[in-house]
Image (cartoon, rainbow, N blue to C red; front, side, top):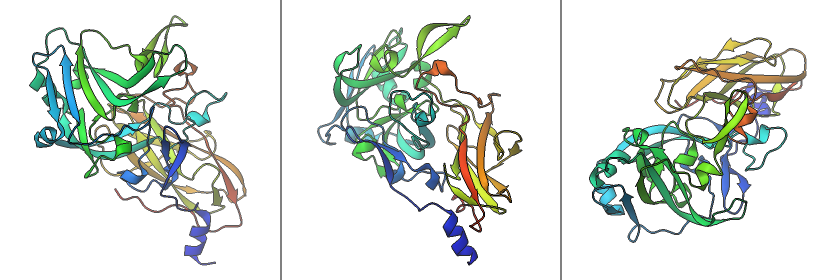
Length: 378
């Protein structure tokens, strides 16, 4: 068998589409094993929807800014397009990413590895819009309200509501929080929030509200459904769960793209393991990998330069065992704050913030030759 044919035989079939996790509303996962580049193409970027995609058109759409402001504002799509923009790369991860690996199984979409992606986002800094309205003293948070809506049946149910989330003004006035109309150089698609969405770099995806229709300035922390009954975890004090806190910043985390779970790799060969790691508002400083279930660890090679709020690609050339059998691969990240990705799951996080090291099981086979994956496009 030729080298090219041998390599092809060890690689899973290339799949550039999205994996269906829920049909209505539509929720779609990036096939993480196909990770090839720093930027995730629009057609491969995961889709998270709580309610059906609203039908919006640019001419009639408006963004309202109200609450504790000096001048309530209503902006058209054309007016926003004329405002000064900023472009930045940022990783967005759903707070439930990796939920499928939890045992016992918990409620929620059973995401595997691909409820995460990195795009170049272009839009108006949120701070510029807030300054145009004039924020009054006493305001502490800004609420993002989307045009998507639906009825929640799970108790305690508020009935029919719009999706809404909030961030503190200290975060809102950083230059990186954007009201985005363009993704990877193209107008947002309906699934990704057309005509306008928030992008809150460094925070889990529930804060990057899509289909924006209102910004509301308030004088107390917002405790809407998606910050009180959902997207929360238990704070622990003196060994006791004391209160539910909203999910906010991303934890430090590394994931293995290849080998994919249950992939067959060739025995006694060099296999190029690779993946990505991210750390919210910090940056990744090191990724360690283990090819023997955690008994020993080695440094992976970090690729490219560190980009604020975006993942760091990494690779490791693994000499596979000469003897066929099963193997367990691990990847673990560290960041600039000194945080280390935990080995064990924190059960108090419920079904969210799944940041512990996830073992990837593979099969080492003596029947194949070659191995590895295509190089990255950095």
